[in-house]
Image (cartoon, rainbow over all chains, first blue to last red; front, top):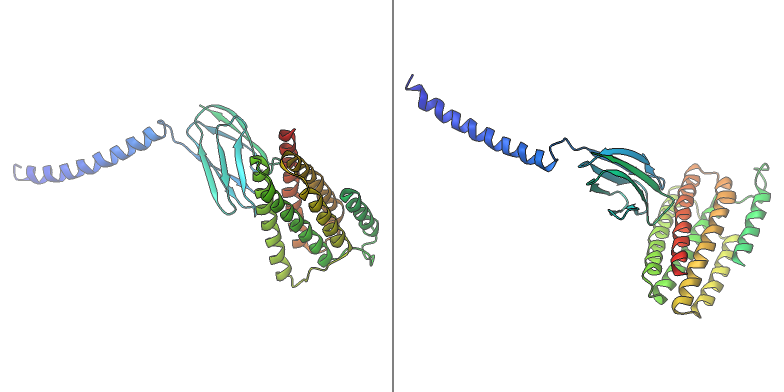
Length: 120
Length: 174
């Protein structure tokens, strides 16, 4: 029995360190996400339109626009919160920081409009 | 003048297309490609003139956008005609567009400062409206090749965006 203790103790501390590290990583990730599981919501920029044009999201979620058109577009919040320029065949994103409905448009092609309903 | 002329050309084209799909006077795809490409090059030349003359931040940003977008669409058009093995064909509408655009650039070259900015943006609103009307009512319905039709349709949406953008810049200049 005493012979086994040091052996087990060694293993235990190694496993303990392993668990500590991953626990810390998990904690950091949780804190970064505000304690909730944040999502990445993808929106296409295609045929001079956002698809889908209306989405719902939560605070902490990321909106990611992928530009499939041959020209650059922007996703520009009408309330001035963000202005993301996305070149053709590229992606751009924002992390949503406050609740409410954000209407946005493309500064270069104002006929492109969309909205994001953000809840807590 | 440009508006009237292109509108007249569009009406002429409309009269020759429509139900008589086989009408010999109907615009061909090589002619349509030439008109669309020419219209893009004209707007690039207008934007380059604005970049040489204007100091207004919004006007210069708009001109930069026009150069970038019309070049992208025209590059796509060139790639398409190459793929389809089609040679764009010069025609009366292309010639009339080029002549009117050269006259307009000459007129604008005599203006400076705010007067130039207003005249350039005002012409951009009118020019995009004219080209968009022609695309919607004449060029897209007349195009036979599906890929050409698709590119013209995408171009129309982009240029409708330019028209709205130009209208916004024009409102800011007042």
